Image (cartoon, rainbow, N blue to C red; front, side, top):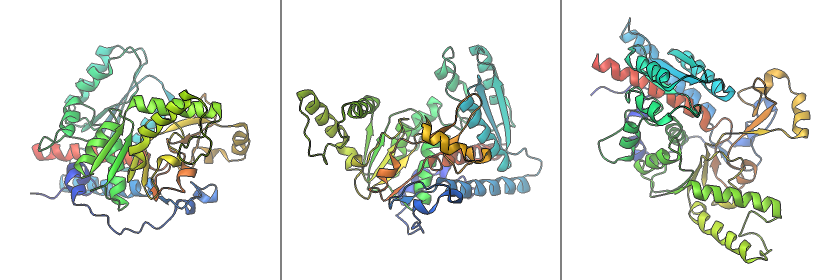
Length: 407
């Protein structure tokens, strides 16, 4: 058969490629502390190697852009791949995400359709817009920007998207096929898990015969992540579900309030109450499989939740969590010294949105302390995020190439 275009092969045969992937000897010796943007800051001071999502995403997007250009040469007159985003309301974070997706699509030579609907739009109007995009031959990928206003039925709207245009991979048809083994493969895979797997592959890290812990069980990241890991040959996969995550959050808050240490193995001080002993034991049992994992992937949206005593020495840590944290007084004073153009720089973790104070973006992992335990880890920002957008472009091109074969 014909060879798949560069830049989309990962989307089409992810499971086969990862199963064959041995831990290659890519040049991955550079450490995160050598990557401070323009010398302004460093990601961490520990010896953990940086899994550079920005660099790998840039290369992946370059490959996709080359495939788009080659498609235009081979099939002159055919419309370029088209990506449509349906946005409901005026959430500033959603507007920022969609803007970045649109910019990335344009740079890759794709058309971007932005359907912006008011916050009070009714369900039937959104359904009509989705059906129109399904019928538009110039659109090869459709995404519904989440979250939606509470009066809209998210499940029904996601189900209205044509599964073969569902580039976010959230239609029940695609989710169900991904969960199944065998030949029933999805049209598309969810972008965040796909991007994380591609980041590991391009970084020369194999999960075959490895134990992996996924912290978080969301429909968008946690559960599909576990299925991709299964297909890639991981020997054991543990998913820490929402109940366990919520307990760990409450424990961390209580430890901060009561002065208890977060680590239950490195402290010489013993809890004095029966209730504290019970909580410590429950936490220990809950984290047992996480502490034994060769690869830990977190996607729960809780800043600094994952601590160094969660991580086995030498483990690989992938942080998919994105959290906006207000600046302290000292941080605000330091930020005032930065030029305005550097605050929203792609290499900075300082951001500002209209009507909001300056904030910083952090992940689920306490990166500084974990960097002294992990062998390699992603940064936030600059890790899984750029790879997620590249995966979206890859899925969109895949949709266009499928259309070419059937037209």
